[in-house]
Length: 208
Image (tube, rainbow, N blue to C red; front, side, top):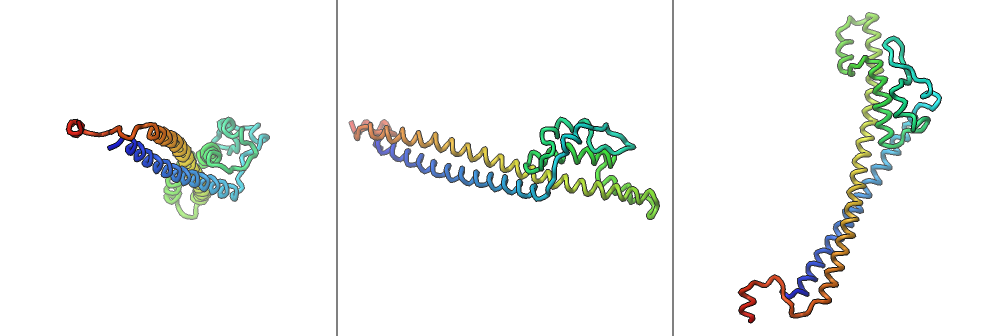
């Protein structure tokens, strides 16, 4: 095969790869934009806000006898977002793990909703202990549900971030491939018509 033809064929294949990478990159960026916008809109509709700076300035240590709205452990995580609305996946994760989850541990004594529910069901129906346990169960259920929804939004945002990275990688590879295609075409123009490539020794001997 003539080297000039070979260079053109390889360059054409490279040009096709550039198109494929550009399309893949465009789709990945669209996926990122969709995920990012959807997470923002869904969270904004919930109108959840972080505690204010004033609230964070007076944390109370964890106590089994008194509920603490703000504990010292929350402050380093929540202070940068004091008073702000929860509208991103990262913020949703912080609110879920560093605020709601701490309250769930306080209210439920570190037990999950399933454990608390089972313990409540074992108590005599209608008793004061059963009523108090059921109230705790319902509170933990609501908190666990909200935490799960926020963490789901966070997980969806991570898929968006992965799509963003993938899109950037596709565009970078497309750029590199475009350079190689240009070099291939440049080399084809400089190559003489009689130059052969991928020719076996037997064929070369017969030609001689």
